[in-house]
Each structure stands twice: as C-alpha cells, then as structure tokens.
Image (cartoon, rainbow, N blue to C red; front, side, top):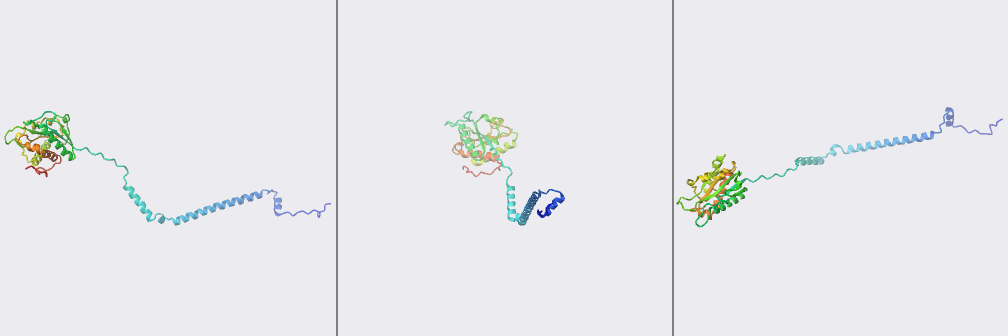
Length: 289
C-alpha cells in the first residue's frame, strides 16, 4: 500500500500541461522565439533606413528646388559659356597659300647676242639697253611684281607667259638730221588680243613722253619693230611691245645722264597698262625742262 503523503508530487505548470494535452514535444520553442525576435529586429532596421532616406530626399528637394539650383548667376554663366562656344571655330583654319606675284618680262635689247649700235667713242647700244632695263626691273619689283630680265634671244622667251613684256632698244649714234630725236614704240598687233596691244602702246607713249618730255617719233617706226621676232615667240596671251628710248646722238645726254627718268617712263607705262590707268594724266615725277 503506497503512502501518498510520503512523496510530494510537484505541481504541473500550464505549459507542461498543454504539452501533455497536445502530445507534442515543444523542446525547440526557445530557438523559435529567438529567430522570430531577430527577424523582427531586422525588419525594423530596414524601415528605419527607408524613413531616413525619405527624410533626406525631402529635405534636399525642399532646399534645392529649381529656383535655387538654377539661380540667375548659374544661368548667366551657362548662357555665357554657350555664347563663347558658339563663336569658337569648329575647325582649325588652314593657313592660306599666298598667290604668286604677277609676272612682267623686260628684254635688254641685243644683250647676249650682239652690241647693237656702236658710237664713235666705243659706247654701245647694248650697254645702254642693259642699264635702262635693270632700272625698269628695279622699279617694277619695288611695286610688288615678279620681273624677269631677259636677253635678246633668251631661251625663256619661247611661250613666255606674263602680264606684259617690253623689249628695250635705242636708235643710231650717227647724226642723221636735226629731227632725229625722240622715242618710238611698236606693239605686237598680230596678237590674239589686239586691243590689249593698243592699250600697252598708248600707255607707254603717254607715260614715257610725259616723264621724259621727249616727243614720239612716229615717222621712223620700222618693220623691224612692228615685226619684232620676239612677238612670235612668246605665249599668245602675253601682251608685248618694243620701245626705242631715243637716238644715241641727239638724245645721248638724257639717255646717259638721266637714265632713271628714262627707266621710270617705261615702268610707269607698264603699270598704266596693268592697272588700267587713265591716259593723258602726267605722273607726279619731275620732268626735264
């Protein structure tokens, strides 16, 4: 017979009673509660992060609204920058190639071929022609032109192309008569552009006569001048003329002592033709009495 008073049975808790009543072992409840609490903590942290970002963004949008972000100062800088960029070239400009200088040909008559007329004192026409031609060349170079100083039968004369060509000669040293004084000019009238030849003839006659105060001796223009061999050798587009600057007898003083005026009369005649200047207007250079 068992004595129930000798052994005290501990009271059964509600949880233990429930466990027995459902017949289920909840020995893992503590782990379940810990994981649930951890999950609940992480979710709350995420919500805090979202709320924090939302507050920051709201603050930014409130402070940096379009009226503040694009203030007048910033907009002004943007417009200035756009204006400057619009004026800048999109490509680096190429350095322009300078155009070649216009070319002129000056022939020193008889040079490289023969002496031409010979005076009693030994002075030769070719010497005088060379001196005048060199001065003409210098005048035209100073005016900005490319000038070729050519010999009488220069190889370069074949198909020679230039704005103009003038061959310089002089007349006899012998005394002929008192009228054997003055200059003569003939142009290549067989040119394909006879109007240009006429223009060069007129310019040389006008400027040379004005500057030297010498008369045009038209009566002694010969076929050797009008049919001058160089006219048929040069390029058809080159306007050409031949000038005899004076007689080496009666005109010797001006030819030898005032050679600069003689040369200037020729160079100014060439420029008159090239620049299409008016005729019958005396240049500003000094004229001999």
